Amino acid sequence: MEVLRPQLVRIGGRIYRKNPIQEQTYQHEEDDEDFYQGFVECAEEPCDAYEVVPTQQGFRCTVKAPSLLYKHIVGKRGDTRKKLEVETKTSISIPKPGQEGEIVITGQHRSGVISARTRIDVLLLTFRRKQPFTHFLAFFLNEVEVQERFLKFQEEVLEKCSMDHGVDSTIFQNPKKLHLTIGMLVLLSEQEIQQTCEMLQQCKEEFIDGISGGKPLEVEMAGIEYMNDDPGMVDVLYAKVHMKDGSNRLQELVDRVLERFQASGLIVKEWNSVKLHATVMNTLFRKDPNAEGRYNLYTADGKYIFKERESFDGRNILKLFENFYFGTLKLNSIHISQRFTVDSFGNYASCGQIDFS
Image (cartoon, rainbow, N blue to C red):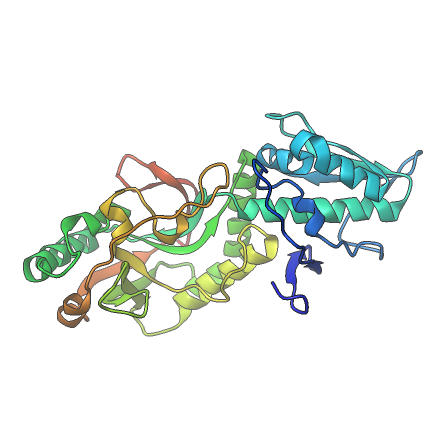
């Protein structure tokens, strides 16, 4: 991180600077110890984004957060909370582990309460980003015709390219799990799942119905492409999806859904546009049939994990199957799908959805 170009963190429409610090490594030091020291807070100015309520003793502000993130506000031996309280001259009440509730900040000065709230938001956002993805917004692409064509694709690839390095049956997607991802989510409580359902319904009412015309979107799944820049060392091969009428409506719809969820904070902003693709081959499946590509980056406790993978030579596949036709589909639903779970049909379990018609 450069001194003149520090990392910026966006919270509630405002941008805060995360100062670089000189890192020192100590034996047995926990990953998040002293993490709080790296932040500069800019909340001495009035902030309309927070609801600060006057009380007889001063001011009060509450923060809603899932219980899984409380420990990051408390810190090791309570050090993070104590430091926050001392520097902002506030008192911070946090529910006990396992209990859902609100973090309550009280103090004699409004500026101190706002400062504490800002710092807590930064901590929550940062450690939320370290959580493994739990859900994703997606279209299911598992209609019978597409499943059958996918199995034909797999059969022909193995027949013609099985001698190519790294190509075998284990790296193909499960046809029942073919899907088109809009965005990945970290939902840590039932309340956040409900919030996501409500946000998706708002998208339907505000612009999805207008784009879809209240009808399913007819799309074609045709052609293949690879993710990286070396066709001889491929990890992910995907099928391309586009509107049958040649319009840009599908791309417009998913981009607007992504934008809305990014603005709400439910999806961390990484891209300005959704890359429409349906994974058909992935080298992570070689050792773990339940792996989910680049989204398998963190364990449940937020530790980064490295997924060793053996790439495959995709040059012949790309040459022979460049324009392979997987079929047509009518996209009529966006699902909030839960990772690592399946329904009675073998697809990802859905905990909410909206329908176009």
